[in-house]
Length: 267
View 1 (cartoon, rainbow, N blue to C red):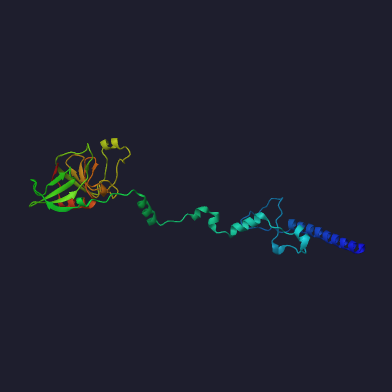
View 2 (cartoon, one colour):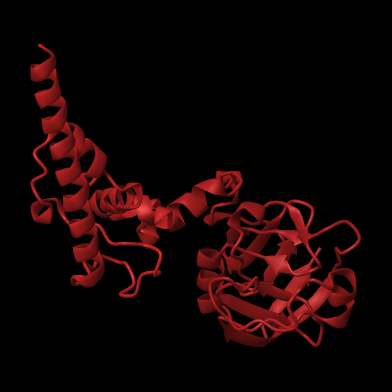
């Protein structure tokens, strides 16, 4: 029994010695052999780091304890790198997770985010009504308290439009004439308005966003106008700095019916 045990111990030592010599030879081959480059890694490695060979290039060490000691065990850095390569690009670039929205969807969301506006009051729709006043046909009559503008037609009729008028302290009355007519007018706030509202632009080109709207009819030499508006929900209210405000579709209709020199009576 002792002789058999002695023989087994000698065989194990021989195998262990062979494993150490084979590992030393492999390590020398790793140092002197060609460098293995991994994806997305720099060509030059630090001198202290020995590149590991791919599993297909590893020598057969017979498995078991020798393989455990000297085999190519998993390299965490390489495994992590391989994991990153297998993942979809949005794991590496979180900003790609943000969906690209269609411009129409963006505009719709912005519109929905705006505060709700009151609906246009049907009382202020343009309509032909009876007129019993003394003004002659072709005259414009502005009824400030009731927020209506009348274009007298004659024969006891007038075309009536809803309007917005001056806030308290900015209403006025008198007789003027239309001195000029402009389509999509520019807007330059007067100094008095800028003193009250320094945040206003000094000048704005005509267009859909311009507060003077689609048309303007200037009253005499004053700063007052009959003009359109990009805020139709304000019709029927005291809202302006003295101008007579109309819906764009209504001011366009009135603009086509009157001429420069038309008499305007504001009451």
